[in-house]
Amino acid sequence: MRDLLEVKNASKSYRVKSGEVKAVDGVDLMARKGEVTVIVGPSGSGKTTLLYLIGSLERPDTGEINVFGENICRPNADLIQYRRKRVGFVFQMFNLISALTALENVVLPMDLEGISPAEQHRRAEELLQRMGIDHRLQKAKANRMSGGEKQRVAIARALANDPDVILADEPTGNLDSATGKVVVDILAGLARRDGKCVLIVTHDEGILQVADWAYQMRDGRLKGMEVRG
Ligand SMILES: Nc1ncnc2c1ncn2[C@@H]1O[C@H](COP(=O)(O)OP(=O)(O)O)[C@@H](O)[C@H]1O
Ligand SMILES: [Mg+2]
Image (cartoon, rainbow, N blue to C red; front, side, top):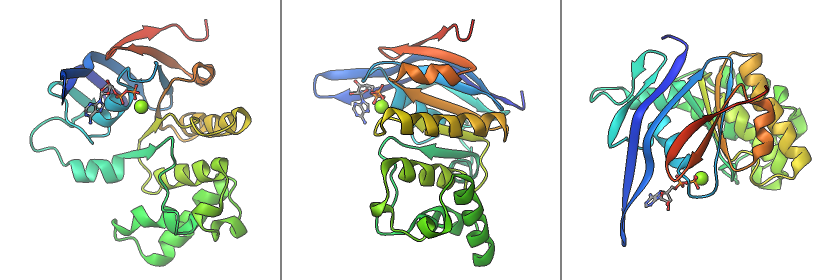
């Protein structure tokens, strides 16, 4: 299906001193464009690993991941293109380059795409403006910004190459609850307004409020949850 992201029976183990940890254990998941899918689970339940599998930062040991009709686990999949163009990441720690300005952080991933500098600049400004980062703040170094500002810059950066999928890993983990709500509403808007496939993993059950679909993760296993009656 063209608007379906599907994980089929995916597993991923890590070798550790004491043996092996099955971080993701036979997971099935579906997420759609235009919808917010939330995965809640405690620390260590495998949420980040699952997001890395979907973002192709890790490969599953077994199973398959289809993103809008493309199997990203097939041997000759163009993962460089996939990571740059099809997915945008939002992290708990923001992961901005602190010595660069907000604008420079958003332009950076565009550099790889060979867009003209003027166009990069214009597009970064537009994305930041949309995230409520005004012109003055766009020129501030990332390390001078508040957590909420940093996360809004990080979302603008995730959108730099207009990906179909937004993968957010504990996006409110370092924010107070009011700021976290602003960030979650922005993420939900990316699904509702822009038709992105938004996937949020979190231990914060409050985020379930914006979920169209939800799953609970525990010990590497995923199961569906009821949302909004
Ligand atoms: N690179 C790694 N090497 C070894 N073990 C890992 C690695 N990444 C995750 N794990 C283990 O896999 C399990 C799931 O981790 P993770 O996906 O980070 O969970 P969560 O994001 O829900 O906290 C944990 O037991 C963790 O210690
Ligand atoms: Mg995690």
